[in-house]
Image 1 (cartoon, rainbow, N blue to C red):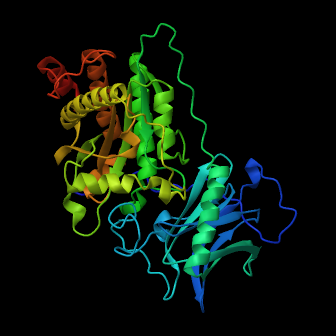
Image 2 (image 1 turned 135 degrees about the vertical axis):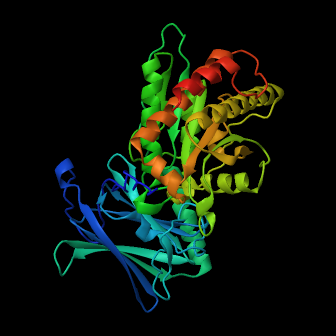
Image 3 (image 1 turned 30 degrees about the horizontal axis):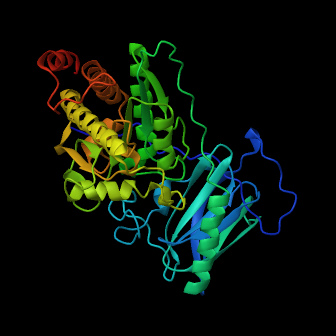
Length: 451
């Protein structure tokens, strides 16, 4: 049988404003004047590496560098990047981060020119009115920005990178990290939790992974994780709202970036009864045969090597978006806190097993569908949380399903039923039960409606 081509091709990130060291009188942004970035190329001249974006207009941009890993960050007003995100990914095995995941895709990436200081790069929306370019560096480098008219019309935004000694780079990276602390990364304001005057409706937080400058996994036919999981989250949210049994909040509702810690804080601040993070995986090399969904819960020690790999890469989402990692000192290590966390993890484990049972009625499961590891986004000590990898964009069958509106409807219906069953059998305040499959009546009912 011939595979259907995925219907969600990559969409273009929203909107760039560009730079200028010495350009004065930058024009104010309006919805109609957001510049388009239509192409990008790399040049190497001597020791200088240039990353050049063809753009419709020049506006002000700022830059800084970060270390561990070495990155150059360029912030600007919104630019509409009409550029395939595949072009910036690293060839397999070359990337300093996500070597087997977020930059893994079936089609090989073009190699950087010989002597290039660029390993890979990303671009996209950061928050309303803001865009960002993140460049992974092969070593210490200084960055300068210029925007000037192009010979063929329009403008060229040029990021110029030159080698820098270790001491100077470390100093610049410390200044960049301090700047991010003083001027935190802007994020999309979260939608307030719907009113619940009688207190009878649990709140479910749906967390579409990645977003904005962080594309997530890239697959065949321009499939992009951040778009696919957002589409799935919207379908799932609609089904939960249709039942009228839940309040639903999204960590993001558009192509914006939200730091991992902010996602967790949102769920805690709103008093969520359940947090469901949605993702899609991708494997390089001989991973095209791996398929099916996997449900992850949090644990101090990974259940296996694959769970450890996935958690390691998911936990680098902030780094992918050019956000300096910060230690979270908000946890209190006392007996009451530990008891709450243990109970929450037990609830998460129960729901994770139940979700896998409901899911397999309508869609494929991975051969090892229930795993655990130290996912940052699942670490709320008082909100049951799971991470659902919907499938693999590196697998033809999974990629076709993930891009199918019909499949999304069917699979999201099963997730909604699993959530309904969880709150029916484990209402807030009740002690956790063993992580068995759904009871016979519930599963039989969902089997009759799942296909």
